[in-house]
Amino acid sequence: MIEVKKDTPMALLYKESVEYLDVEQMQETHEEEMQILNEVDKLAIQYSMDKAKLPELEAKVKEYLAHVKVHFAKEERLMKKYDFPSYEMHKIAHDMFLMDIGITIKQWEKFGNIDKVINFIRKSPEWIVLHINTVDAPTSEYIAQKMKLEEEKN
Image (cartoon, rainbow, N blue to C red; front, side):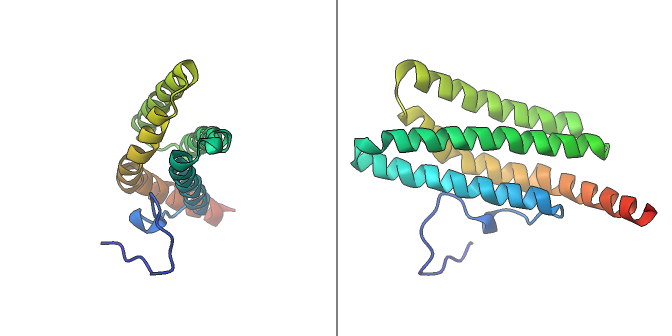
Protein backbone atom coordinates (compact mmCIF):
# COMPACT_ATOMS: atom_id res chain seq x y z
CA MET A 1 0.00 0.00 0.00
CA ILE A 2 1.22 3.48 -0.86
CA GLU A 3 1.79 5.74 2.11
CA VAL A 4 0.58 9.28 1.42
CA LYS A 5 1.69 12.04 3.76
CA LYS A 6 -1.03 14.26 5.19
CA ASP A 7 0.25 17.33 3.32
CA THR A 8 0.36 15.48 -0.02
CA PRO A 9 -2.53 16.46 -2.30
CA MET A 10 -4.65 13.62 -3.62
CA ALA A 11 -3.71 12.52 -7.10
CA LEU A 12 -4.88 10.10 -9.72
CA LEU A 13 -1.42 8.51 -9.95
CA TYR A 14 1.67 8.63 -7.74
CA LYS A 15 5.22 7.95 -8.94
CA GLU A 16 5.54 5.54 -6.01
CA SER A 17 2.93 3.33 -7.72
CA VAL A 18 5.43 2.27 -10.35
CA GLU A 19 8.88 0.74 -10.53
CA TYR A 20 11.80 3.16 -10.60
CA LEU A 21 13.44 2.84 -14.01
CA ASP A 22 17.16 2.33 -14.62
CA VAL A 23 17.23 4.80 -17.52
CA GLU A 24 16.90 8.31 -16.07
CA GLN A 25 15.40 9.73 -19.28
CA MET A 26 12.59 7.18 -19.13
CA GLN A 27 12.01 7.84 -15.42
CA GLU A 28 11.80 11.60 -15.91
CA THR A 29 9.40 11.24 -18.85
CA HIS A 30 7.08 9.04 -16.80
CA GLU A 31 7.12 11.44 -13.86
CA GLU A 32 6.31 14.38 -16.16
CA GLU A 33 3.47 12.43 -17.72
CA MET A 34 2.02 11.46 -14.34
CA GLN A 35 2.08 15.12 -13.32
CA ILE A 36 0.19 16.15 -16.47
CA LEU A 37 -2.31 13.31 -15.94
CA ASN A 38 -2.91 14.50 -12.38
CA GLU A 39 -3.38 18.06 -13.64
CA VAL A 40 -5.98 16.82 -16.14
CA ASP A 41 -7.84 15.08 -13.32
CA LYS A 42 -7.68 18.19 -11.12
CA LEU A 43 -9.06 20.33 -13.95
CA ALA A 44 -11.77 17.74 -14.62
CA ILE A 45 -12.88 18.05 -11.00
CA GLN A 46 -12.89 21.84 -11.29
CA TYR A 47 -14.79 21.60 -14.59
CA SER A 48 -17.48 19.47 -12.92
CA MET A 49 -18.14 22.44 -10.61
CA ASP A 50 -17.42 25.27 -13.07
CA LYS A 51 -18.00 24.74 -16.80
CA ALA A 52 -15.88 27.83 -17.53
CA LYS A 53 -12.84 25.60 -16.89
CA LEU A 54 -13.49 23.75 -20.17
CA PRO A 55 -10.86 25.58 -22.31
CA GLU A 56 -8.19 24.98 -19.67
CA LEU A 57 -9.18 21.31 -19.39
CA GLU A 58 -9.17 20.86 -23.17
CA ALA A 59 -5.71 22.43 -23.43
CA LYS A 60 -4.35 20.13 -20.71
CA VAL A 61 -5.84 17.05 -22.42
CA LYS A 62 -4.10 18.07 -25.66
CA GLU A 63 -0.85 18.60 -23.75
CA TYR A 64 -1.20 15.10 -22.28
CA LEU A 65 -1.76 13.52 -25.69
CA ALA A 66 1.22 15.36 -27.18
CA HIS A 67 3.41 14.26 -24.26
CA VAL A 68 2.34 10.61 -24.62
CA LYS A 69 3.21 10.66 -28.33
CA VAL A 70 6.67 12.14 -27.71
CA HIS A 71 7.21 9.79 -24.76
CA PHE A 72 6.44 6.68 -26.80
CA ALA A 73 8.56 7.87 -29.74
CA LYS A 74 11.57 8.46 -27.45
CA GLU A 75 11.22 5.00 -25.89
CA GLU A 76 10.89 3.38 -29.29
CA ARG A 77 14.04 5.16 -30.52
CA LEU A 78 15.96 3.93 -27.47
CA MET A 79 14.70 0.38 -28.00
CA LYS A 80 15.79 0.46 -31.64
CA LYS A 81 19.16 2.03 -30.85
CA TYR A 82 19.98 -0.68 -28.31
CA ASP A 83 18.35 -3.49 -30.30
CA PHE A 84 15.78 -4.38 -27.64
CA PRO A 85 14.58 -7.94 -28.45
CA SER A 86 10.92 -7.32 -27.51
CA TYR A 87 10.64 -4.08 -29.45
CA GLU A 88 7.63 -5.16 -31.53
CA MET A 89 5.61 -6.28 -28.51
CA HIS A 90 6.41 -3.05 -26.67
CA LYS A 91 5.54 -0.91 -29.70
CA ILE A 92 2.22 -2.72 -30.14
CA ALA A 93 1.33 -1.83 -26.52
CA HIS A 94 2.10 1.82 -27.28
CA ASP A 95 0.15 1.74 -30.53
CA MET A 96 -2.91 0.23 -28.83
CA PHE A 97 -2.90 2.90 -26.11
CA LEU A 98 -2.54 5.65 -28.72
CA MET A 99 -5.36 4.13 -30.77
CA ASP A 100 -7.65 4.00 -27.72
CA ILE A 101 -6.98 7.57 -26.65
CA GLY A 102 -7.15 8.73 -30.28
CA ILE A 103 -10.63 7.25 -30.74
CA THR A 104 -11.76 8.81 -27.47
CA ILE A 105 -10.47 12.24 -28.49
CA LYS A 106 -12.07 11.98 -31.96
CA GLN A 107 -15.43 11.27 -30.27
CA TRP A 108 -14.91 14.29 -28.04
CA GLU A 109 -14.06 16.52 -31.01
CA LYS A 110 -17.02 15.23 -33.04
CA PHE A 111 -19.67 15.27 -30.32
CA GLY A 112 -18.24 17.85 -27.89
CA ASN A 113 -18.54 15.60 -24.85
CA ILE A 114 -15.38 15.84 -22.73
CA ASP A 115 -16.77 13.26 -20.26
CA LYS A 116 -15.51 10.35 -22.40
CA VAL A 117 -11.99 11.79 -22.27
CA ILE A 118 -12.20 12.32 -18.50
CA ASN A 119 -13.37 8.72 -18.10
CA PHE A 120 -10.46 7.46 -20.24
CA ILE A 121 -7.96 9.54 -18.24
CA ARG A 122 -9.29 8.20 -14.95
CA LYS A 123 -9.07 4.60 -16.16
CA SER A 124 -5.57 4.97 -17.62
CA PRO A 125 -3.54 4.72 -14.37
CA GLU A 126 -4.29 0.99 -14.24
CA TRP A 127 -2.78 0.55 -17.72
CA ILE A 128 0.13 2.88 -16.94
CA VAL A 129 1.12 1.06 -13.73
CA LEU A 130 0.88 -2.34 -15.41
CA HIS A 131 2.81 -1.15 -18.49
CA ILE A 132 5.61 0.51 -16.53
CA ASN A 133 6.01 -2.33 -14.04
CA THR A 134 5.86 -5.22 -16.51
CA VAL A 135 7.04 -3.75 -19.82
CA ASP A 136 9.02 -0.55 -19.25
CA ALA A 137 10.98 -1.78 -16.21
CA PRO A 138 12.58 -4.74 -18.02
CA THR A 139 13.08 -2.58 -21.12
CA SER A 140 14.83 0.07 -19.04
CA GLU A 141 17.01 -2.53 -17.33
CA TYR A 142 18.09 -3.95 -20.70
CA ILE A 143 18.80 -0.50 -22.18
CA ALA A 144 20.74 0.58 -19.07
CA GLN A 145 22.94 -2.51 -19.35
CA LYS A 146 23.57 -1.79 -23.04
CA MET A 147 24.36 1.86 -22.23
CA LYS A 148 26.86 0.78 -19.57
CA LEU A 149 28.57 -1.57 -22.02
CA GLU A 150 28.70 1.22 -24.57
CA GLU A 151 30.31 3.57 -22.02
CA GLU A 152 32.88 0.93 -21.06
CA LYS A 153 33.92 0.59 -24.72
CA ASN A 154 34.53 4.34 -25.04
